[in-house]
Length: 443
Image (cartoon, rainbow, N blue to C red):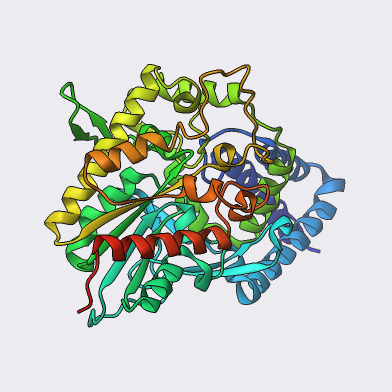
């Protein structure tokens, strides 16, 4: 090997080490706030080791060979993953300046089902309009029902035909009302994001019926964490000009641009972290709610996807944060109704109870009534039903339905989402409500 070639290899090794070190210093955790962690420390150590070895004659040659071998292996792995497993690790969400984030039109990925719920993979496809499922009918030949909500509605854990919107369309069709169901659910969305999305989509979608699915577990807290709306001194809903923290924004961007091998490594790391997490207590959730309530008053959103049970409403309903959340939720529902009415649509509400409340012996969290004497199992559902009555919105109360039957079968195991059976019951009851209230009429 000539001296010139040796010098070139040493320079490349030094530059490669510096690049790794620099990447460690600027890399954010995917989907979270920037924080220097174990992955970054390992990357920084590898970069500094490579840079230092470039100055040691007996080490740089061997290390350069090993470094080159690793790069070639990673390159081959990247090509193989993109050819054979792109949809297994592809993101379906991107940053959005209005809603904080939204589905990527035409995106698709596989959802890994927990073995406790049967295992396997579910292919989740986003159509060109940005909704899960088939492409919309451009001719709009059937009445259109648009279902908004969070991860319970998009239901990545369920096959498309088992999701609530599709089952609702099937139930209505069996009752003589063939409809086109649009799954406008987005994982992590709160009712505030759904309300804004409806405002910007209703003129294009022209739905005959809008169904808003509210999860009476963490949707109240979403209204605080998302910072999209607040209440003025007169109690009226006011739009806030909020933005994502830079780390959150870069998290969405890097999920799209990052190499496939990095996505695989990140998923494995997050899965390991999830297995190591300890169980939460009611006191933990109360503290989280208090932290949100006393949080940074700035319009910068720092917590977007870390949702939790709204313990303040369930355990301390007369507290300031609980009362504010309940009023804010009521006003968001009122705005959704006003938007639907202006667009020539009707609005219906579907309320899903948390398994923490509906299922006393659940595998997520059990509340000690002696320690929390003010706790009521319907405390989170009640204000939603009252808001629906106050604003004249027809409502399906799944707390009553789920607790009257084999409650455990309506939820997924070790999970707070409803099961396929829960979605089926919700679809049946919603279809019945549509007919009884005359919310849809055949064309």
